[in-house]
Image (cartoon, rainbow, N blue to C red):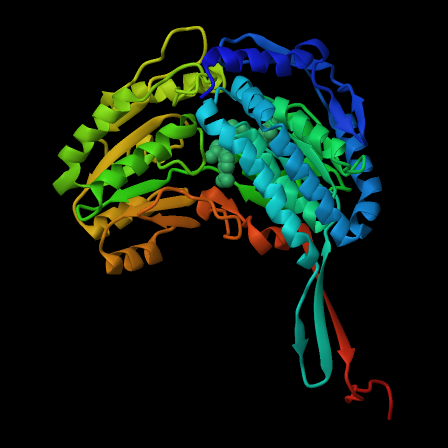
Length: 503
Ligand code: NAD
């Protein structure tokens, strides 16, 4: 296992070029400055400056949208086998540079290396998986009727915008960009202003692997200006968005005049329900993993624990002990399990819930304080004595903070689980199969895991219901978004055509 010192040394080798040259936009294969000047990005580890980043406005978005538009026909018409080959080359190049991606991501976002080293490789998997889907992406159906032979096919929708958040930004960006490219779309990517580094690496890797200029463009800046302009641009046919629910509403509004197609992956307040008949050892591991890994800055985190009253005291006691033992530290220390939060604002938001919890009458049973003042570190925190009506049970905190709520009956657990604006994921722990079938049927969530933590399988649909989103990613669902269905009906005989205007 690498040491912290080794990782820091290796990081310096990778990040120094950004310190010196900053991050420019990448449009049509060229490095361009932002028309708004630059903004500065800081590391959450010690608040030091990483680099200047292009600050973009509608002018830069226009350039990028035009570049994506100009590159579209060529990319759409490239032989599927060629596109597949290219995407596999990108996957291989990501694997070759996985260490660089992981270390830069840790430094840029505060995520622990323990998790980010895998996230980079999952980015490669996204490219590899969708590369394998390229050949059949355009396939359709044959739907015969008495008079027609009907066929359907799919065509790429056109240039698309991809707007991503700062949590696991590399992996999430590939998750959107890989299927868009596989479908034959060109892309303008607007990464989160708080985590620009690995988005830059991605476009560089893609171009070095042979992706033609203009097929993937990266424009940096803030959502209110650059993101908004992307949503409003007439040459951009669809927006794939990942971020907060309230930003999702803005995305829809901003795209209304140009009739944008939107795919929204939004927030969550996901329940993990532990029944007394569950394998409590495994349930405990999964509960802890799903809220405290990735700093709890994870849309699918199980941030609400619903635990049956009969086992509550024992389960919470064991939970408290484990939460207090979670290793918080420098994200490049391979033994760290939780790193600093992304920004000062976010740290303030998360720690603000410590006061809210107490004022609502809940107990802080573990954590509840920041750690040092060098970076944005916070203790993994557990709230107990909570009920489902409290803000700590209803609002997405998006940090290493878990709210534990007891329930008595299955019906009550279901009510609590569903009583939220969100509906992204749910996790159920029980050994009663019939209960699991009944419960999952009525649980309002786009994705549910039974006796398991979240394990992503790329062919399955990913997405949420209610305020957690609209649309699905994964497998063919991604192509449904990035492609248009086309129907053609061929007459198979001389069927009767109703005559108008003849005597
Ligand atoms: P955010 O909504 O603040 O920002 C996301 C992106 O949108 C950023 O690139 C930002 O610049 C841009 N943006 C902001 N305002 C915009 C506007 N008016 N028009 C266009 N773009 C705009 O979200 P965040 O704080 O970066 O990320 C955290 C959120 O993302 C959490 O709510 C989390 O649950 C959610 N998320 C959801 C999923 C999912 O799959 N459902 C996955 C990861 C994160």
